[in-house]
Amino acid sequence: MKKKLDMYLIYLIYIFELIYTMSAMYFNNSIVTHKIEIFENIYQIAYCMIFIVGILYILLLIYKVGHHESIDLKKNTGLLFGIVFMDLVLYGFFIIPMLVSSPAMKMVCICFLIHLLICIKEKQLFVLEK
Image 1 (cartoon, rainbow, N blue to C red):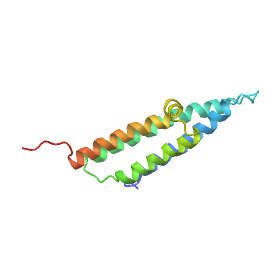
Image 2: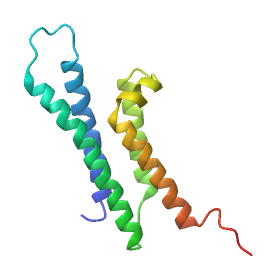
Image 3: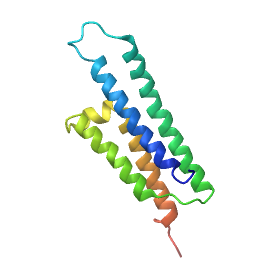
Image 4: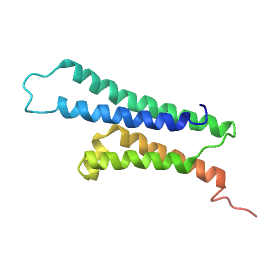
């Protein structure tokens, strides 16, 4: 269970991104004259949960690096690219609106940076030797 926890956290980001997008589509729909308050609450909760789960994922990566546990960066990066592709489809392949309005994209960019730093640390890239 502990080995796959990072993968499950990424899957949770998928789920909350879909909930966020579906509730945003309903909440922002101009055709609907009578808006249901529950969708506004779900919209806000899903927005916050994307960041909470993303921060938990980053903290788990830091924990695993600190305790020298193995991290499958290739699989995790592939799963994060799935979120990028999902957002590209949901936002009609417009990159700028996706980067501005999607909370999952903000977390994915941060996770990509963390993956890059872990890769640099593990492979000891850019180390000047004498």
